[in-house]
Image 1 (tube, rainbow, N blue to C red):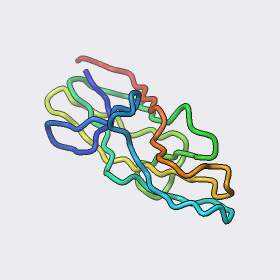
Image 2: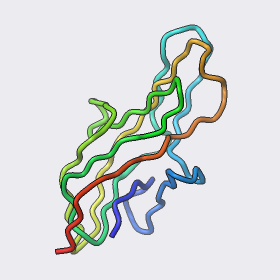
Image 3: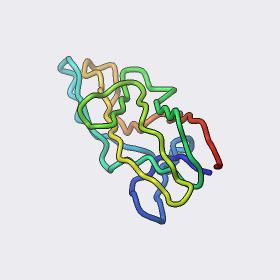
Image 4: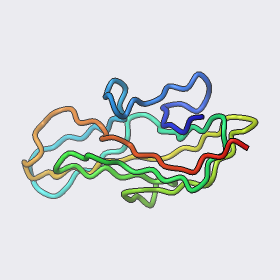
Length: 131
């Protein structure tokens, strides 16, 4: 059973390792400290991949964000928020994938140092049904 985020939608899946940082979701932004915010979208596509079971009540959000960086997620690439609730996925007979969209909004007031920042931990919850 699996409900994970990947950078592709065909097998073999290239899963993001959101807890170890070895293959993270990345956004790139140039910060100059001039004020306001800078928004950057993910450098690679992000797909929710369901394998093996039926999943309902799916919810995805980011936790443990860095101060000054607001990571947001969307099902359509237009309306972003802290969490999303994709449609139920039935992977009993075949894997299911759906593209999701990730962006980061950086404070550009000098409070966020120049550096490489990766997405925080993703929290995916769902009801799993093996039948």
